[in-house]
Length: 463
Image (tube, rainbow, N blue to C red):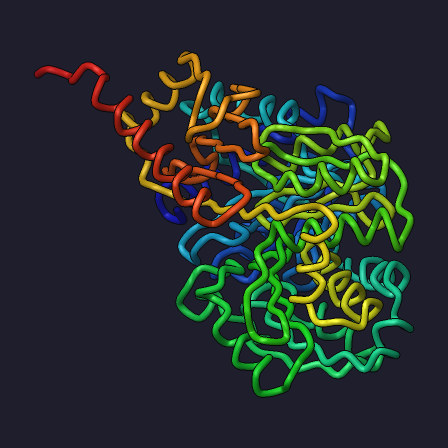
């Protein structure tokens, strides 16, 4: 939280450590710096520029707040050594964070961030905050032209505009304003926008594309009679979709539709990356198309090396994350949202009908994620479950157990459950997918019961 853990001193410390790691790796070059719409994000970004130039590193800061995928694109386009952007993504306004992007435009993998964290830990107690900025090494640039050009190039605008599709857009007061709406309008698509002003407080709620937060977009779809509603989170690396009946389409269903569209209609070749928590509809679609699925723990940064090696061409993440190598090998909510508009335009059918057809081809799977507070006892109980032998769960035979990230149980009928502590907040996340809503609810109840039972068996601390 800003003012507690996220302070100017800690930002200076992290940037100081980042320069040290880049030097060790022999990768010190131009660094791209940007920020989102949060109250202090721009000030943190300018502080980062001062620290970088103090160390003799050339820094280019964006003229305005930018979507994270735009920053990643600029890093790759300019062959910069690193991209640094200040954002807490979809989290509430009182939070902030730092995202790093590699020269290839991918999210920094754990190896790099782990090195930086180790230097931070070693220097934290004795860190000297004194620094002397070198203004001659700092520049300001737009940094968005190349990304906008990529959206022009990488989507079928003739199909979208020619279909007569009406689109409603909600950037949730975030950095995608004047990006997603601008490119739609530029291509002659009837576009209706809500929440397209800069608000550091995001209208008083977290800039996350949840059904509860999309009331404004829902009303805009209704009033404008739009064929689709598109939303992006605070830094635009995640998407939200409403159909023409104002119903929210779950991210896993959007991902499944887009994967099938990419490997089918668009003919995108290569493997498909999927996190442990992402719908197994991806597997069914990939199997039907003869494509390999590469499974990773939760976290989009795991896909970076897979993109670079050519092992995957598409990456999917349950929390509304999609990356396509031919566009950008990183999570891009703007591109994913616009690709959904293309899909609907090309199909010429309502989204609900497209979902029914998807189920008809690949079978029904419904998924859900719930969160509960994560105490130390809850964390310990999940760790204890990691050592337990599961032969049966929810009345089904357990066919696979994976303990890389929490505990995953896959069941004989294709359903599965995953319990894992969140990486960015004190929450236990429970994911489940089943062949019916009734079974889904039962699986979630059983996971919660098993976690509670494990907590009760833990020894209690004594004073």
